[in-house]
Image (cartoon, rainbow, N blue to C red; front, side, top):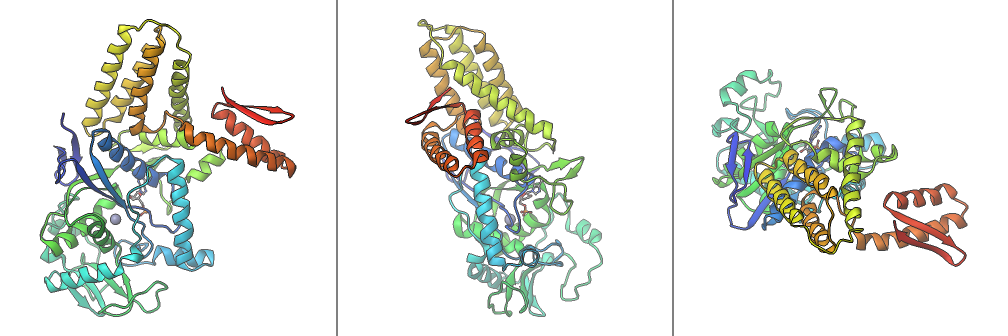
Length: 467
Ligand code: AMP
Ligand code: ZN
C-alpha cells in the first residue's frame, strides 16, 4: 500500500517514496527558545510526531532532526527588529545563553509530557556557526550571495525559483515588497545570511566581521550537517512557508545544486477567535497554563492531533475538555477488556478488528487523515462494547490497540514506567506528610486516582493497586 502526502511544493498529494528505501530523513523547524512554547507551536510538533510515528508504524526508520533556534531569529522578517533571544535577555535580566538553556529545558519537559517522541538530535544553532560560515563562503563563491557593508545577503535575482514554494513568482513578490530602507541590499527581497554587529550579545568572528548568522541559514546548515544535502521531508507551521522555507531552499540549492527537500509539509495554524495563536498577539496558552487549570497533557495532545493538520484548528477550552473525554473513553475500553471472561472466541470480534485496522491504515495513508482514522477506532470501541469478548479475543484486541497507539500515544498508560513513577510519588507523599504539606500529599493522591491507582493507607505504610 502506498502512502500519500500533500506536498506544499507541488500543491498536490504525492506518493511518498524516500530517497533510500526504508529510511526517512526528516527535519522539523523547531522552537526559538526565548520563552515557553505555546500550544500553537505544539500543534506543529505533535503533527511532526504523528508523522514520524506513522512512518515507523509502516516499517520505516526515521532519522528525525529538530533544531533549537538560539540566535538570529529577529522580531521582523525583513531583517529588521531585535534578536528574540537578546530581547528576552533584556526582559528577564539574564544573558541570552541562560535564556536558551532555561527555555530549552522547559521545551523538553513539555514534549515529554505531550508524549512527543524525542528526535534523534536537537542541534542548536549556536553550535553550528562554523558550518554556516562555510556555507556562506560557498554561496559567495558561487556568485549567489554578496557582502555589502560588512553584512552578507543572498541575491534572490540569481535564484529564479524563489517564490515557488509559497506559490509566488519573483516578479509578484518584488512588486509587493515594501519600500526598502536598507541601501546595502541589491534587491529589496534579498535576505541576510550574516549580520555584522559588534554589539550583539551573541557573536562570532567571520570573514565579514564579528556578528551572527541569519535565521534561515541556520536550518539549511543544521539539516545538511545532521541529515544530508537532500532530504525527504521538511516540516513547519504554515507561517514558515514564506519567507523562512523559501529562503532555506534558495540557500541550500544555491550551495549544492541539488534538490534540498522532496516533500514539504506544513501544519495550518491553531487559531483563537479566528487569529493565529501567537506570542505577539498575547492570545496564547502554554501547556503549563492548561495543566494548572486542571487539564491533562493527554487531553491537550488529543485535542491537537484530533483535527487534520491541513485544517485550521480553533482553540477552545471545550475542545481540550472533549480531548480528555475521548482519552478516557479509550482507556475505559482498555480497562473493560481486562474483565473479559468468556471462554469462546467470537468470530465477529476478529472481523471488526480487521476492518478497524484496515480503515485506520487506509485513512492514515491518505495524507494522515486522522479524522477518519479516529472514527474507525471509536466505531470499533462502540461495536466491541456490545459484544461478549473472550479472554483470548481481549488480549488480541489489546495487542492491536497497542500497535495503533504507537502512532497516537493517547491510549496506553506506560505501566512499567508508571510503576517506578508511582513508587517515587508515594515516597514524595510520605515526605510531604512528614512536612505537614497536606496540599501536596492530597495532590499526589488525586493525581494517582486519575491514573486509576488506588491507595490504601495502612499502619505499615501505603499500599497501592490498579483500580
Ligand atoms: P517559533 O518558535 O516562533 O519559531 O515557532 C515554532 C514552530 O511553531 C514553527 O514551525 C511555527 O510555524 C509553529 N507555529 C507558531 N505558531 C503556530 C500556531 N498558532 N499554530 C500552529 N503552528 C504554529
Ligand atoms: Zn527552520
